Length: 537
Image 1 (tube, rainbow, N blue to C red):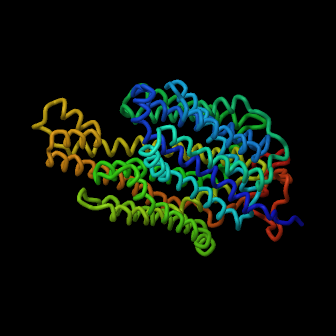
Image 2 (cartoon, rainbow, N blue to C red):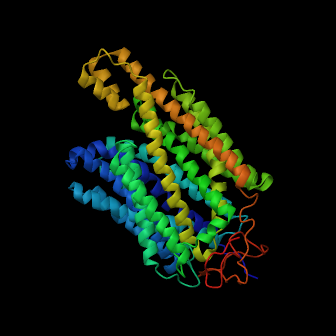
């Protein structure tokens, strides 16, 4: 009988700052873009690519990074990821040209992509079914907390120091994470090292990159843009070829039999749906706080903290709720609370103060904290320690696709609602075009003209578009309630057995013992074939 590794909770603490850096990096750049345009003489196209290149590389590198984690060890890859993130952050801070900054952002993206399978992929090997939800909630919370901290820290740093400080801030967090991972995280890897499925790597990376690029292009132009449609179609075709190849090859990069597990399939689908829904909030609330309420970037970050407080509160009780109600009802409850918060958000008026927004954000955060970690744990529960890296990377890659579609679709909804509510007949053509371009431009024009009526109209029009987007998000959350009730298993890892005629392998190797005592059939065991592939009923 194996005993529990006493370092497993310290190992979790070590992984939290790594996840925090990824969350900060996803939002902090937006604040620095105007300064970068001046300091690096960057064009509008280059500014767009500072953001887009990071997303493309992050999506393309995720699954190959998962393979590296399974093959060479999750601790080793997590350490490499942290070093890469630290070096990339320093390179961003001291870049002198747009080309140097672009290269540094790409390096950061590679580091962030390796953090995900390094951290998440280690959880099935470290924790039992009973403990894993708490560990998942901690990693999810750290990533989500990093998103409002990005504007909060970034706003203060930009007004106090030079623009490079928004990237330097990563370095001390990375150093803390490096020391903690070295000290506390035991190594784990696949018992039989997976081979490099070169066609699978190429097809998965290319497919996800094309899909994300198509969504970015559609968001910047329109959904009828030929380049966007071509990229979306090509991405779908390449991912279909990837699926076909994985079914035929003897040692696939991703064993598609994993999708026979309802916990994995619907847990992944629902976490992707959460990413779609929350993009409406992440996209619109900074604009609402800064352009409608007239707050600074720092004030914007402060007023998003109630959502993080709600997330933490929801994550704390999520395990208890899932234990009492079962996974199915817990996920449905989380989505229902999220939908309620979004419906309240859709009732915002331009004259409402920040207190109302903070209240409904807290409610939405509670729903997010209950639903997201529980759904993600259901998906991770289908993974064996043998393939935790690739499996967790696939979950995160699909979540990123959902977030990208959410940003593009909900951004289009907001813009359409905003422009449709404007009445600009008396304005000169040039001023009218600027006002219709964005709420930020509209507010600037109104202030330049000294027109209180135009300012009020611009702000009311944006709130109208934002409310419409929140109703779409709420509809997606209600769909999540239905999907959870109909398709989710009532227990993480339920219904999984080894394939017929197969003996489960011994699991992943580890430099430290993992807890299995008193848990004869943990959620992550019994889904591997003798050669380590996942076989799920």
